[in-house]
Amino acid sequence: MSPGSIVPLIGLVSVAVAVPLLLPRLTILMSLGWIILVRPGEELISMGLAGSTLSEVDLLLIAGLVASIRLYLKRANSAGPQLIWAPLLAWPLWLLLRSAFPVLGNVDTTGPVIDLRIIATFLALIPLGVIARRYGGTYLARWVCYLAYGTCFVAVVSWVLRVLGVLEPGAYALVNVSSSAAGDIRPGGEILIPVLAILLAFGKAPLLLNSKILSFALVILEILISQTLSIVLAAAVGIAFGLILNWRHTSLTLRALSLIAVLTTALLAGGAIGSESRFNLLARADEASANYRVTEMATVGRIVSEDPITMLIGSGPGSMVIFSGEDISEKKRDTHNVYVNILLKSGSIGILLFSIPYFTLCVRLYRTNHPLARSMIAVLAAIAFVSISVPFLWSSGGLLALLAIVTAARWPHPPKSWLTEKGADATRRKTL
Image (cartoon, rainbow, N blue to C red; front, side, top):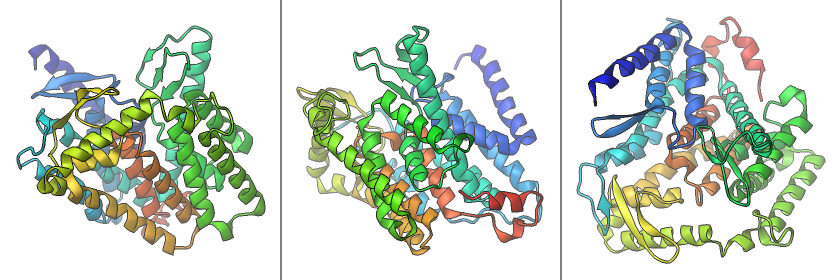
């Protein structure tokens, strides 16, 4: 690190510490929101330190932590966040422990730091927990929904600017504008689109200007602009799943509309409608992107199955796979399938430690017999589905979005000890 870069770094750290002390809640929501919305690899700040690359994501995590401490201390008699995160922390702790052992399997390596950085995202559980315990999980869920609306807005504005010739194709912090004939536009935070679609379908999301038409229209526009088949399928899976879970709590109209939406998605994906559409699953099955993903999974599957020890504990963080084939010929540290990445880096033990906490949460939410809780199960099912083909969760933004949803589902309301605080009753009444 050069001496000239020390001064701006000190300035950034100073701001990251000072602002959270003055505006703790706003700092938490804005800093974590940016981490979710910014596209991986397109962060605004990038600097080298001790052989690693730091960005504003790292600084914003620090800001969120400082702000959470400040917010927690604002009421000396307030109960702090419960330590319920042990199950969620099992996988990152195992990945950290796994880095102490040698790299296994037919792989190359760049060192464990590049994969271990994802562990830092779990620190966001502290500010998320403070917000949920103080204002309620529904408050946090509304924040997630408004971030999703922001993602849709970025996509629509970018498309308009692209049509007007103002925005050139390229990769930007909040959006990627393709130069291909399809002209697709991919905003950051796309993982939130199926989340918003599901909660809107079951009436559990806030509405823009109290208008269902405007809210649904914005989501549909984003889907048409981004042309991401995985997002559409994930939303359909989540809505179908939620419809089954909430069958007794939904109106006949909602059931009919939801079934029509799921059926239409199935027809589009199956090729019965719009054979030339990018949403046509059968038409795209022979495309390079589909074969690319299949090759990734097959190659990693072969590597981990060659040795029982590798299958059990993985090749280790920092491992890189050499893909050599007609569809893909390069060295990569991860794949498009999140579960394959977890299996490669941390083995079958890692898969279990990663999956069990979310499965357990779904069981707990199901037993509440509450429509909002069961809608959250549908949201988690959609994220689990999309993770098969899109590596959202293998990034700080995607993983943070999942942790925010889990935290919101864990605390639907503020604790009773805080209901007497100023504004707490009003906050509690603002349920989704």
